Image (cartoon, rainbow, N blue to C red; front, side, top):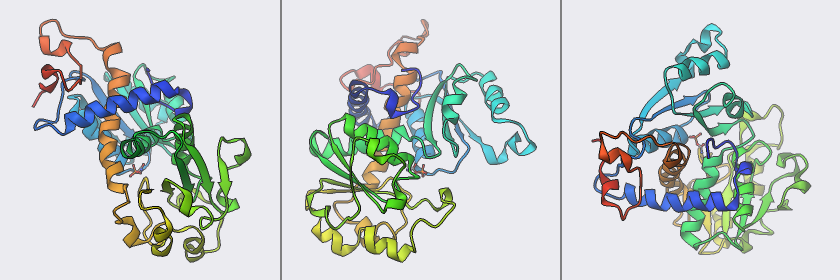
Length: 330
Ligand code: CP
């Protein structure tokens, strides 16, 4: 694929291919030298117009593990503050010679718009309420690594679904991979036209908690709410938070997931966030390998241009069985 903008654009086969490729890169990351030359001579720009810790850092690490050159564009210290438009900003960066742009923006649709302004591959790192496809991939990968498959698993997505790009991406990825998705939220935090989505809906967490395989908690996104959608954080926790008492009713084999950043004490109690069933940090770790798979997919074999003077560069193969794939720029 040239771009990764939305899980809606990917087939089940493409999702599975990316998850299989992630397995290969997990193996690379476990090596003594956790680096391959697959994207040597490629330049990846991290263009984050909205704050991020996990996504930006893991794309940075992923690109470096693939031997790409990485440039981080910081919107707060850019000429955007002098009134330059996003279009001029993107075309300016693109003119310097860029192979891929990883874009986060607070407005839905900006990464797709950027594909019209650059020849580079564009990867959506989160746009408004719309999509966060690499989060969906790393969440699906984490579930698959525990259960072998998502087929037939019941995944409850709990919380601020209305404002969540993670929820929108995860619903599409999980259902395409065969899971049954249950949305659990007060009516005010459910998305419009929820009945058109391939999901079931419950308004009570207590009524479903004993029967789910995966509990995926979402952050209350105060920055995206312009009205009070629930009475107070305390009442939200009482109805929808994963408290210690609720965690006892969750199956011992269930996974407790959260994309981060967490509001400990609201959607998840502090002690439960560190429960042995919690995959929060495992998700973050898987994010590096998933993002290696995505960058390799958009820039890898299809567009790879080997240097005839350098035999190593002709082999972008991350296959762990291939000893050449362990060679990398140090
Ligand atoms: N999950 C996620 O997107 O986290 P960041 O905002 O820290 O990137």
